[in-house]
Image 1 (cartoon, rainbow, N blue to C red):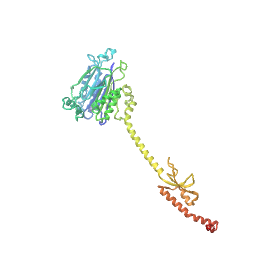
Image 2: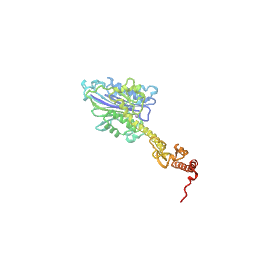
Image 3: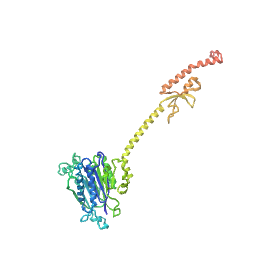
Image 4: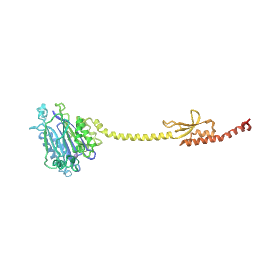
Length: 449
Ligand code: MN
């Protein structure tokens, strides 16, 4: 059975607060809608259109994709009757696997075993507005749709170039959208489905940020459609992310019915409006916005075969952001530690003190802190050659107090003072000795011969 193997991401981008884009992904139909209109209009318009398209494609009375899009137009137009939603509208490009002729698009005979025939299966394509469909064939990207926009009209008339159009201040002005009138002109084509062809559906938030060369390179590089969609969206965000970005990558595959029915329709968009999509299997894609409390969507996610498991997706997209944030944080922490360590090292190494050298018993000057600080052991600077016991009790006490000094000069001045006092005390010591145990003459040096 010919079907799509598709991946999709719809992202709010980096400047907008609301995602007005919406995407539909299933085995048979893929679509991108870019809504517009004040207040909540834009998000509602794209959602209503995608919802209506999905319902229409499941309705046996709807025979073509274009008919389904007409229903989408009517649905948006009806809602636009509400006062606060007046003037809302949405672009929509869509691609569907269909069986033409008298069979309804919803006919289950798509399955070859049930009478369908791969040769009769067609790809129907429609477009209204400035979202685009591209096709990648043998590595070459070709654009299939024509934008219904002011600038594209000017390009067609030869009044501006494609390059000027890309920079044009009114490049967002569309000339045709769903929902602003009872009737709508729809561009519609039919293509042969070729297994291996890759289709890209996207809103202008992608191609306004990323040139077609890089889009093509990304589509060639990443075989997995979901991975390719993620990468395109993150590249568009890196390019500025000035608008909502929605990407559907759909590969045409023939699975011989093996995987048929393994996944249903899903609507892809950021969380903002999922609650409004009652009855939908909604997949929230949080690629650029951190959405708290979305646990209730875990079950829906796990049932889908197209998306990698949630944890994997988190890692994929969370990693780049956390890398630089964590990096900065780590650098800051390291910086704080380095400064603290530097201060400790400075403090630990820059003082001086006088103490007894445990190795020699001599009074000496040390650099560092008494007893050491962390891994900084004091180092011997100079020894006086004087044993502690040689000093008077008063001086001994002063040394035993282990006095500290800010500089070597101060420590030396202290020792000089100690030496001076020691020298001054010698005669008195001798006198004391002589008065208690000897005669005064014994202290008189012998006369020279
Ligand atoms: Mn847009």
